Structure formats: C-alpha cells, structure tokens
Image (cartoon, rainbow, N blue to C red; front, side):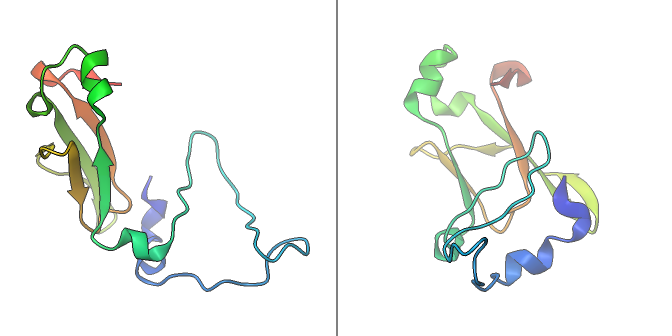
Length: 117
C-alpha cells in the first residue's frame, strides 16, 4: 500500500538500534495489520535493490518450459500515486532486480497474461 508516501525517509535512512523491548536488548516490537508482511534484513543486503527469484520447481508446478515464459509485472509508488512499470523478464539465473523499488508489489504472469500463483 506504499505507506501513504511515508516510506521514502525510512528507506534512505536506516533506523538506529535502540534499547529493545521488555528488557530484551535484541528484540523488536511490530504492529502487523492483517494481510501484510514485514521483511527484516540487514541494511547491507539491500544495496543494489530487491531481487525476485523464481525456483526451477515453480516452472514445473505451472507446466512451463522456460523462464522466458514468465513476465514480472511491477507496481511502484511515485509522487503518492501507483505506477505500473513495463513488464520485466527474468534473467537466466531466474532473478529480476528491482533497484530502489522497496515499496513495489509484483505478480508473475505466464503465457497470455495468466497470473501465476
């Protein structure tokens, strides 16, 4: 949902470690609304953007023969509005990188634009 345009500062500036929660110095307290996910990772792992990886088993499960049959549709936020990006193709390694698109949502589409779940 893009955080109502409140994400940009957080993505550009890592949050410093504080004192923890309930006397546990290495803990975190999160509010997670329904049907959302929080991905926690070290800041250094995000350099170069987010990667979407597709395992070979995914192709088999969907009756596909190659990665070339999959398009990655990506939607990002710009100036408070959702923007649909041109479909991306997976590389030979089964990965597509979204440079600086930390708030992106995506879906995988097979032949004929059929959504792959």
